[in-house]
Length: 130
Image (cartoon, rainbow, N blue to C red; front, side, top):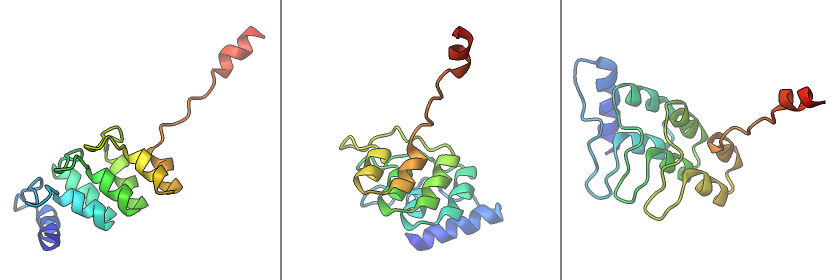
C-alpha cells in the first residue's frame, strides 16, 4: 500500500492522471491520507487534500487520518491535518477523540495543537463597569 501511496503523490504532482485518492485498503479501510498520517509523511498531506482526498473519512474502526497521526506521535502530520481542516471532534467507534488519545499517551505538544483556543475574558466589558 505504501508503494501505491508514493504513486498517488506522483500522480498528484503530474496532474495528468487522476488517482483514486479515497481508495481503501481491504483489511481495515485505510486511505492514502491515513497511511501518510500514520507514517508521518506531513509533506504529502497538503497535496493529497488539495487533490480531493477525504480529510475526515473513517476506517473500519472509525479512526481518521488525524487519529492515526496522533496515535503514531507525528506532530508535523497532526499540524498539517489541522491546518488543512481536519475535524478534531470526530470520535472513533470506541468513542475516543484525538485530543483524549494525545493526553492519554502523554503527547502534550500534540495535544496543544488539538485544544480549542482559550477564550479571552471580556476585558473591555469589565473595564467599562469600573
